[in-house]
Each structure stands twice: as structure tokens, then as C-alpha cells.
Image 1 (tube, protein in one colour):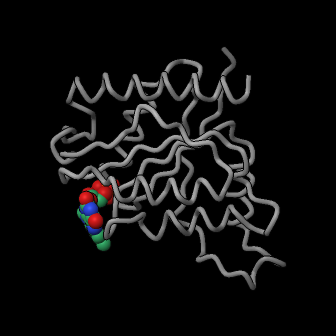
Image 2 (tube, helix red, strand yellow):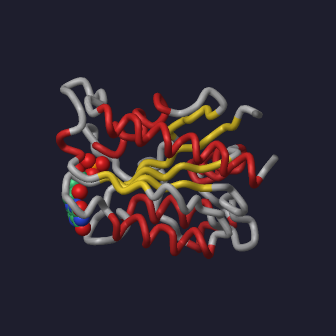
Length: 184
Ligand code: FNR
């Protein structure tokens, strides 16, 4: 199996973000062939179509980083039953200029994370809607909705739940196979 560069986009800027901790736990649980790297999005200026002719450097850097990646893993909380604005902004930034989307054809997977019982289902599926338009083949199974996230980590941010660790391992194995199927 080839080694794959997986860009991890986390939909929260919060220092103690459960989503970020989950992204790190996913990296730990991933097979050797997947190299996961969190790609920051908090520095991206709001997308504004007027800037397409003279894009700010953070937009260009982010687009280039996504373009280099073999695949993208989104790990996101839910805000008001949808994706946080900061994540939508990152998606919009790398989708432009028109016809030059950095996301095009990148295999994707989604892990939604919440302290609540509904496990950010709404954000997970709103994100899937965007991925259809972005032409990103999103892994269907296993679906990854993780609830009760406030009880899964110790004070250092390490995952302390073995069942979640096992589940993350299965998700990442399936993602590796999904990427291989799409880009043998
Ligand atoms: C939330 N939260 C939340 N949770 C949820 O399960 N469904 C929701 O619709 C919302 N809506 C929402 C809106 C806003 C503006 C905030 C700030 C929060 C709670 C959210 O899940 C919680 O704050 C998480 O801890 C956020 O994820 P991170 O930052 O821990 O990754």
C-alpha cells in the first residue's frame, strides 16, 4: 500500500477543542500508510470574490496545501445544526477561483464530534452536501458520529476510551482502503 498524505481540516479554533483532540486520536489510530497532518484554517481571511484576482497569501498557501494532499479528513463540531462558519469559509476559499477548486476529486471522510448525544449529525450531513458539489468522493461507511466527547479525553487531551479508539481505528482503516480504491 502506498503512503498517503491526508490533510486534516478541523472545524473548531478552540484551544481545548474536542474535535482537534479527536483529530489527533484519529492520527494515532490510523494505519502506517496514512500520514495525517492538521492543516490550520483560523488564519484564512473571509472569502471575498473580489479578492480572486489578487488573493491573500494565506488563501494561496491553504489552496496549495490541499492540492498536494492525497485525501482530506474533516473532523468537525456542529454549530446550530450545521458546520461552523470557520470550516465553511475554508471550504469556500479552497473551492475558488471558479474551475480551479483544490478539493476536486480528493477522497474525503468526515468525523463529527459533539459533547451532545446527537453527535453532530447535522454538521456531518450538511458537510456531505458541500462535498457532492465539490466532487469529493466521501466515504459512506462506517459513518463516524461521535457523541459524549466531553468524557473521552484526559487532562492532557489524550483519548481515554478504548471503544472509541477501536472505532477510530476501523474508520481510518476503511478510509485507507477507500483512498486506495479511488487512486490505486
Ligand atoms: C454549539 N454546540 C452545539 N452542539 C451540538 O451538538 N449541536 C449544535 O447545533 C450546537 N450548536 C452550537 C453553536 C455554537 C455557536 C456553539 C459555540 C456551540 C456545542 C458544541 O458542540 C460544543 O461547544 C463543542 O465543544 C464544540 O466543539 P469543539 O470546539 O470542542 O471541537
